[in-house]
Figure 1 (cartoon, rainbow, N blue to C red):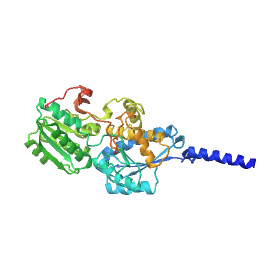
Figure 2: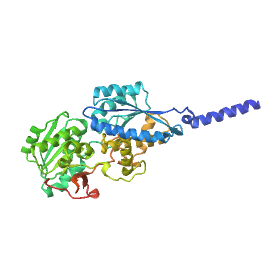
Figure 3: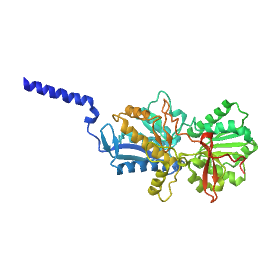
Figure 4: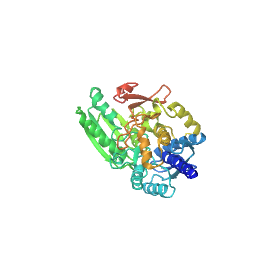
Length: 419
């Protein structure tokens, strides 16, 4: 009887311990598999490769330290990046996203860069009930109350990106002489959403600003000559061009070729991928262009991960040949890694909804070189905001950024009209 009582007590204690820490009792995996895609060629390679390179830098750095700490198993576990090349093709991306989930059985699911290549991942993640670490896909349609399987990691949703532009135009613009605005945008989730938001912000401001040209064009557009002549005929005081990096390159080249001097000219990737645009457009072609000031040009205070100066050193050491440009997207990939790292340190299991809970628990608390990580209830990023700035050249002809708006982060005054 005594032996039975002791055995029962031992069994009860064992069961109690098991119930108290069921995850820790499980066998830890030999690696944490993170599945993602990248585009080494095609229209989106210029934004995808820096993001992927930033994520790889983070993974290699963590593995050199023995892996990432995973709370679910109370130990460091190495990372395995399972990555495939979608070549900027959405059909290929769909096939490969499915492969990552159904064949590779990845633990964490990470989208390729940009809204176009993220779009198929959103649907696939939801169908398979996999939580999607959305790196830079900002399209408004990705985020809804009935889809808990997504959060945006490294840049704000498109619906709030252009707020600094609109505020500058409507609040500071009239005093500068800005009254007529032209909007040209590529018809994809990223820039189409920004155009809608910019239009909305301007109209809601009730300022003496008139939109005299408002046109959407295919993302594949490579020649802007006719379009530019039509814009010039509208006599705008400010031209806002919203497109991907190849669009900006073609647009700004055509502006130079035609000898057009719009009083104010904005383009997204003059700021986000400055090195790439300088190679293809030239420093003089970017001088006085308004753009977003990326985190690669801002020294945000951090409470986790490297600051921007240390990250730049690590980047240059890892990629010394300069073939992959340093800029916003290189910061974005590293930021995704940091969020994943903090998520694994917080989550009590690798269950997809527990990963979601862990990600959302970081909102408003995590401060990286990309700014403050903050999510709305649908997983849209509402932190990591990018101020409006203007590109200037220093005495040696090198590019520098002047933050213009909001005023509390401004480092200088706008040059208007553009000389």
